[in-house]
Length: 441
Image (tube, rainbow, N blue to C red; front, side):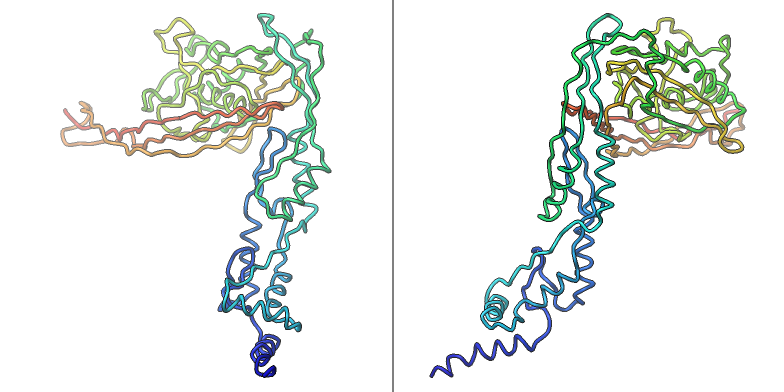
């Protein structure tokens, strides 16, 4: 009788120790293994997918979203394959039989991946990048031009060893988020006054470059506006008006006729190209964490494409306008407790190409800035027909090709040591119609 009772388990055990392959319903990390597919290539795909997943790394107020691979993490395909093949194939019948029972009569068995840091150099490189972005000495407060106090900036530092350990532990557990506090020190109790503002601004905060073609009226206007902007100073808490610095664009002040955008159409006007200087400054200020107080995009997508949508800037000083407040301006404000100086440079790049460089120098490190642009919608453009007496009846000429409209959402996150500032700006470029000149003579 005992022999009859023991016979089925013994047969199952003999089958287990002599049969190859993964038992039905066996999972790894919750994913059911397809027994009809080659095991190692299948596991390699799963491991690559795992390594490509982004995790949230938060240090103080700062956030990063690296992939596990960027942090040096990986899964061992060989160890996983061996663990899967060992399920139900143990020489110990008391281990093999329950696995076969779960495979054919239960919900199967889940095998855990073994995750760990296998690329220590990648982890170290990423931690050092974080440290370079976060670490800053404390900065004393100052006063704005009206003698109102501007608070100092606390110092901040990354505990490198603690950060390494936290990332390693998160990788091993398979976590999708981790948090580590930064070391914060208060600013000095004294308030600083600057005897020489320009010499106090020696730290390069941001650099932005755009290209242009020399030898044109547009180039003349770009270079003239850049020279007027060079050396402009923003004291702590102070604002800068682009139109006030560059002035009205007219021939008496050296500005030349050039193509410019006016109400969505390209036309000839004095000062065309000055918007490129304003846009280059705007982009530098945007990425340096300065406050953008007045900004407007062009009335159509930038046909010159010197800056991506959402960074280009339209400025104008119409002939009939006398007061600065009535112009279309670009204004930025310095939120830091130290002066910021604007420096411009014009350089040759390639034959037939020059570079406009705008640099911001300050008395300390800028805040770290994250940014993104996402497309919200596109609007088709129509067609506009205009009579033209210079053309014969029935003759048609294309004056301007159409451009579809675009609406984007511009996001900026400024990380200060004590808080995170999130901004969203909806930037709209209306559609530009195709303009046809129709003969009426």
